[in-house]
Length: 205
Image (spheres, rainbow, N blue to C red):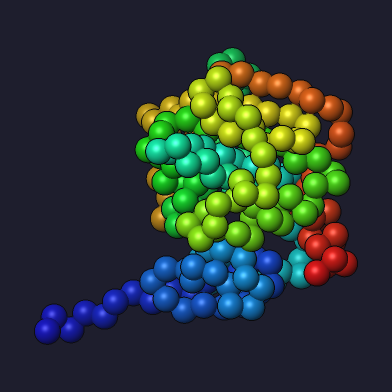
């Protein structure tokens, strides 16, 4: 025996605050049921984040892709515009998700903006895993020019091609940099933010 021990990390659910010890985050949170992309790694020796403190209030999106004729999408708050010319955006996606695997292999993805009244849609695509269910049994979509899912009813869409040279690999996530090839604006509805979503879900669930 070498005398070395396997690394064990502390993970914390950003939704309910429950902790998990292990090399990887759990597939689903045992307390609130959300999948692994809702967990963050607490570095050894660092002071744990107080989740009652004000947090970044990001806009929520659906990130989607298709592989082998199977469509999948997930709710993502880590999406931001990088440059205007060329039009580049970044989407940070947990490596444990099916969407991550689809985007990495296909090289294209869609971004669907969520409206202020679409908390239930965000909850559905964020809480359920595409490895366990077909998410589009409950929602319909149409194909973008690159063949990715535009979920019907969203107020805006972006069709993107991955820039593999600019994409960054982190420990738990891949930050996919995508060039916007096409965009649509369906309505001027206010976007759904993460804090709005949390407040509404606390009242409903």
